[in-house]
Structures are given as C-alpha cells and as structure tokens.
Image (cartoon, rainbow, N blue to C red; front, top):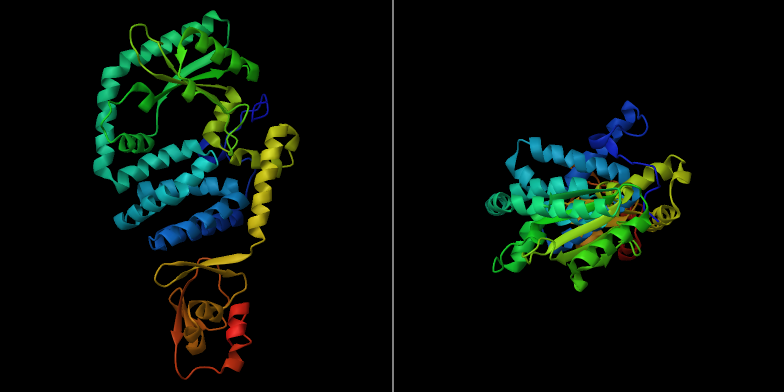
Length: 397
C-alpha cells in the first residue's frame, strides 16, 4: 500500500505552495519568535559532545510536537544562511545544522530541504573540500553525459516495450553525501556512476504491484547485485520512506558499470521529497479519511512519541558559558544554582538572565541564558526555601 493516499499530491509549505490554511498576523509573529528562539539554541551552544546530544534531543522534541512548523524553520534557517551578514554566525549555524538538524531531516524524510541545506552548509563550513567535490562532479558530468543518456534510453525502452506507464529520470546525489562517501573510500577507488548518480523509475499509476513488475523486468534483463537489493515497500523505513532499490550490471552492453535504480509510485516519490510532516496537515485538519491505514499508523506512532516527550516537562536553557541545561518546568534560578553545586546554591544571591539582573526566585524560561551571582551575605536558607522547586534544592536546603 503506498505511503500516500492514492490520487492525492501533497505539497508542503511556503517553499512549495501556500500554507493549507490561513494564519493570522499574531500567529505569524508567534512563529517568528519561536524560530528566533530555536535559532538561539543553534547559535549560542558550545561545541561539546554532551551539548550535541542534548541539542539533538531538544530538536527531536520540537519536530515531534510541531513537524510542519519545524519544516518552516528549515526554510528560515536557509534564508539566514543565504542572506546573513555576519560570517561567524553563518559558520556556526551551518556547523550546527550539519551536526544536529541534517540527521533529523534524514530521520523524518525531509529530503528536499535537507539536500539544499546540506549543500549550502557544506560550502560554508568547508569551502575547500566543497570545491574539490564540485571539481570531481564537473569532470564526471562532462565525461559521463553520454553514458547517463544511454542508461536512461535503455531503461525507458524496456518499460515502454513492457507497456508500463512510467517516468524514468536521474539525478546527481547530494554533494555533501558524495563527499562523505569519497571520504570513506579515501579517494583510493575510482568514482563510479552509482557513487554519484541514481536513476529512478516512477510508476505513474500509483499501483504498488507495478513497482514489483518493473523491478522483476529489470532483474530479468540485467544482472542485479544481490547484496544491494532493498525492499522498502514491504518494510518501509522508520520515517515512512518507501521504494525498491537495486544495483545492476550489464545495463550498457560491453560496459561493466554498476547502475543504481530506484522504483516507486508517484505518491512515494512525492513523499520521498517532502517527508513525514505532510501527514500532519491531514490529521490536524480533520481530513484523516484521506490517509491510508499505513499513514494513520505512522502518525499515531509519532504522536505517541511526541506525547511521551512532552510528559517530561523539562525546560531547556543555557549557562552563561554556552552549555545546554535542563530542569523540570517551573524551576527557579535557585534550582539551577543548586544543580551546579551545593555551595553555589548556598551562596546564590541573584541571577543574571539574558544580561539582566533578576531575583534568585526567577522562574526559568526556555532559551534563557543564566548566570548565578553569589555572595557571602545573601538570604538565609529559610528565605530561600520558598524559591526552591526541585527535590535537589529542597534536600540541600
């Protein structure tokens, strides 16, 4: 069963089509504030393994809670990377995107925006290596143009003669993913067609059975690599991605060239670019009858994960050094002081929140940057007890 409802072409968000429903100016402003808050997490964080783990956890929670808004945030990040005037800020944002957001995009199948941002961030963070890969691609494109055309002609002829209504196309893979593949190969092996190019046969009828007919047809005509065949239709990826993958030899006579082919329905192809966020529009807008049973199960699974994470009720914030911290929602600056060290809590007098001095009773908000101000002549522990929220603070007091 295709992952998207038959006969429906789902287009996502402002980069692809207007939002499915009108939103007020107040909502737009609220979204912008949220984007700036998320941006602050990426720009302020100190680059340590522990911070990366917590940051990934934080954005995973955001994606599960509001996937369509998170998709819009990716477009917001793209604009900041393209038009930001501060080079250091752009470099920091690009670096954190590749470490945190890019893997999440892959996890949730947001491949269209991922490809654009991967390329952009790779060029910003490592311009020399980016140019190396571009040179390899440019050289390969120049020498392989006729080969690629020949492969497309062969594949189109086979499906046409079989009477199957399919679109055959090809595309170069993500520049950043090519770079990582070349790194793994350590440039010791020659670049081959399937390293940087993927052919795709899209079944226009959206008939899943035809996908298997196409793959059987290819396997009958060419020599498939057994270890490279993947059936993501019968068993979809966790993000809902569906397709048949196969790498074959003998597509071009007298040329032992591995050719990677992906076979999928038109709806699967649409989903492979837009990702899981598309399903939330239908579930949210009470149009769930347009979803297949597979889609409904997928939405239910991710909603369950979202609810579990929301139940944690933690607030994420920063130390003034740039480390990400989290405490139970409702925690005070005093609670943070005691989480740092007992003596820091005992001597805590006030707090500096986002550069502004606040009482030690200040209730921590998401994204706050907090510094504890200590003194030997501060409030008594009895007075402090009213500001304590966590069991750690109360037990220390």
